[in-house]
Length: 110
Image (cartoon, rainbow, N blue to C red; front, side, top):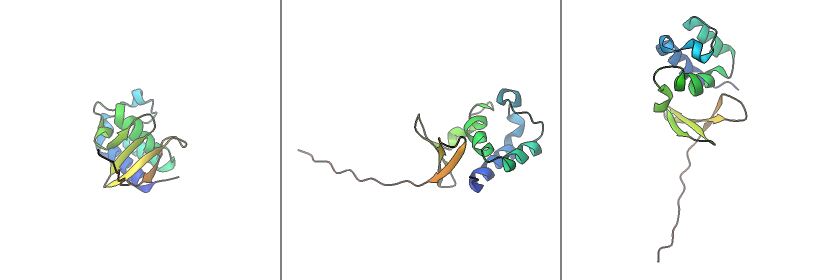
């Protein structure tokens, strides 16, 4: 399912960092920024792939690091413009919006 915020985020990354991407390392058979943006718009999973793979190890700098809120075996959550998005492990490279919940823990002290 297409997520406009995630797509826009990935396209913005491509527009600003395309020249830094190691296309060979990413095994991405494109040559221009325009081709990359076209692929993001065409394929639902591409924006998620940009965030989870290209932004992590496809450039000399880990650009995803500044957006990651949580990253472990069960959760990959990023924050974009005060909104949270979790990687949907059932749909590869897809993100769904999630919302933080406050939990109150009551503890008895003796």
